[in-house]
Length: 433
Ligand SMILES: Cc1cc2nc3c(=O)[nH]c(=O)nc-3n(C[C@H](O)[C@H](O)[C@H](O)COP(=O)(O)O)c2cc1C
Image 1 (spheres, rainbow, N blue to C red):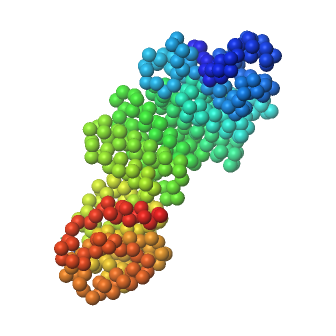
Image 2 (tube, rainbow, N blue to C red):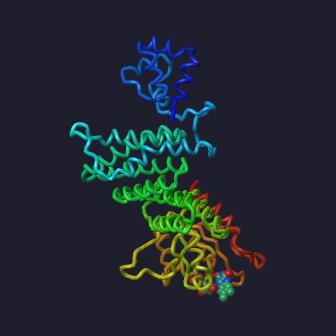
Image 3 (cartoon, rainbow, N blue to C red):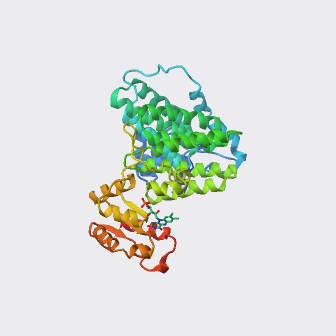
């Protein structure tokens, strides 16, 4: 399989150099330039400064040109993220080195004590593979992967303590890159195998975001394999359930893995022909993108008429109505803001008096005490809101920083209209500004 550094070649030609002339300027043989351009060899560090000067680029830009290795095709095209299946055999060939690494179960003894890979070097190499993948240089990434995986494995094997956890993180990231490349190349088995190893490494590194990315890759692989839709769904849902229990403040990498899994779950539901379920996953992904995680707490009265299972599915969190029993884990994240909707006459009055005789009121009383942003959307008949206690109590809540959504207040008999959920969502968004 012929490889070529097209960007390097293009740059030389753009400056009007033929290979002989460039070789002359660099004081090397023409065959050396040819080997660099065919990605058979990499220029030594002492050549790089001169090449960069000759090609009038920075060392960083030169590195990018050297990293950009593509399959040389008969038409002179580079191989990127094309869905053209005529290149499938060439793509499969790309993974030969990776597959050989994956099926070599004997531990490597190639490292001398001085020659062992270091954490910064492996980190740089893993970053390089991810960069190549981002720039659709799948062949270059595939070429680097066996060595990167070998070094990362060795680092994880030899490491101890914190160093070991960091090494397993890198190993997981390297396997994730391998899985992404294999997925692009269309090799489901290799995608699955590498995703599986990424998951094991992520678990050993105790890194939830990497574990979620690995699960996403595994589910993608299963989707590519015939008759594995059930397994793909199981992997995606198990990971989503796990993420729903995550109680620390959301990290960007965790959010992005969560979003990707939700979109995948939507695709899986759509493949099953279940449009309703697909829409639920998409709505969840949208809420995640908006930056809010929604949990529902119901009063005991509301719990009798709402569909708790459907809401739990929609939000990814259990709908709670009862106090937690001793020893029962707290599965809900800490709230950044609280919305009370529809706020009944009963709840508003009891809340203002500090009564905590159900979980929802207990949470509201605490939220008020902690001065969390609270939005209340009252929903009660005029005959009730006309009661003198109501005005007193809403005023008390207002002076204690509870924001009422004016349009939702039932001041007149005619305003008995349903809650405006889009209006509430907008008001929640304004909390952030
Ligand atoms: C069909 C039905 C509809 C009701 N609608 C309302 C309402 O819109 N607003 C309200 O304040 N109470 C309404 N109630 C009365 C409440 O359910 C009742 O006050 C209850 O104790 C509220 O409990 P909670 O505040 O703990 O949810 C309704 C009751 C029934 C049976």
